[in-house]
Image 1: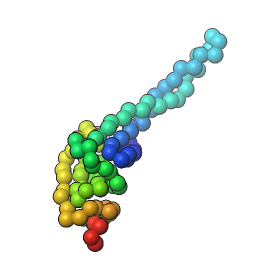
Image 2: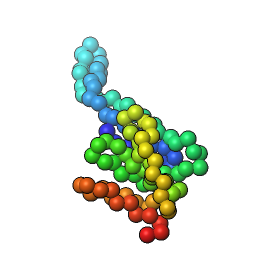
Image 3: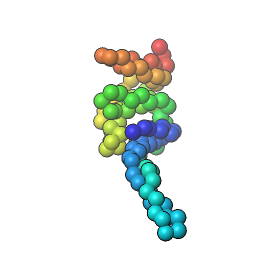
Image 4: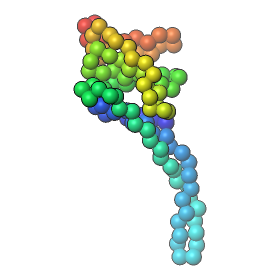
Length: 107
């Protein structure tokens, strides 16, 4: 699974193994291929812009926004799990083994 962050959407992709049959005349060749599945999460607020993201070990994505808000999304089900209101706009996040460090614009 991997994720791509755009201005207002989080796209998550799952890549699954698959097979592809190629016909050359009467001969059929079975080759390896892949199947791609994607989910999309978009916030209800149209003015909200996503700036940075971090993926935690529990398979959740934490997204910094252009407002004083940090959101937590479950990418498997494309749903919002938690919103954290901050005093200032979040600039970056860092995960340690025990804590999440959030750097804000006001320091």
